[in-house]
Amino acid sequence: MTLPPGWQASEGTLSRPLVLSGRGLHTGRRVNVRILPAGPSQSERDGQRGITFRRVRDGHTLGVVSADPSLRHAQPLCTMLRAADGVGVRTVEHLLASLLACEIDHAIVELDTEEVPILDGSAQPWIDAITACGRTALPGPKRFLRVLKPVSVADGKGAARREMRVEPAEDYALTVRNNDLKGFGEMEWSGQLTPRTFADEIASARSYGQIKWAVPAIVVGYLRGMPILRGASPSCTASVVGKRVIGGLRQPDEFVRHRVLDLVGDLALAGAPLLGHVTARRPTHEMNYRLLSALLATPGACEWVEARA
Image (cartoon, rainbow, N blue to C red; front, side):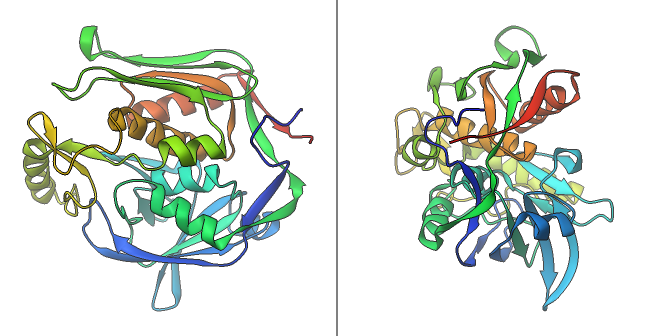
């Protein structure tokens, strides 16, 4: 397979460990993260070819969770992974998108609590930290998941309808439309996804939401014993009050760019970049998962390919 423009021909890992701390968006708890370089054989020993999450406490491993779509555990407003032994890691989407965009194909992510930190609400701090660590090429060729025939999923009716489709293409392309906040109109982002495009156009877009809806969600979460938005604040989200954003938007269409960020992170559970065109109308984490699940489950819909420079 001819290497798509903008991507490296070989797999890669970090050149040195990455250490970073922050608070979880949903748990509100402080978390320390250490991302370790890994090769294919080391990742496979931990149960997954690619990215592996390792929960640790006081130097001891509590459990290991692979970045695998079969381990996805439905939760509100984030993507969570849970292993068969119950060990889980939530809000993995921004980190997975950043690792994919920085072409870190193998790594071990250690956390001392269950949630990846939200940082400033975007992927930019991850991109900066990964770039500062550097990338080391591995011997194996870069893998892609090539789409062979269209697959689509949908939910709802009328203005509330959500639709997603992936179809064959020579590169990784996305067209995302979103209008989930009244008063801001419909926003659209369309383009070819490459490491450069992600860093320049997508990474800085923050999580967002109406403050008037966040407070009831937090209360309901406490009543149900489920962490929801306990760490949310204007410092880590684009917080909307009426028809304005506290502190302003980073881009006029920041909301849809963040939907692209979440989509890239959720589809990264496949284990590699896609070769396909994803079209999404009003995507959510649930819909992103449904599309990926349908693609992997549909006979003849996709295949693994290796790049040639």
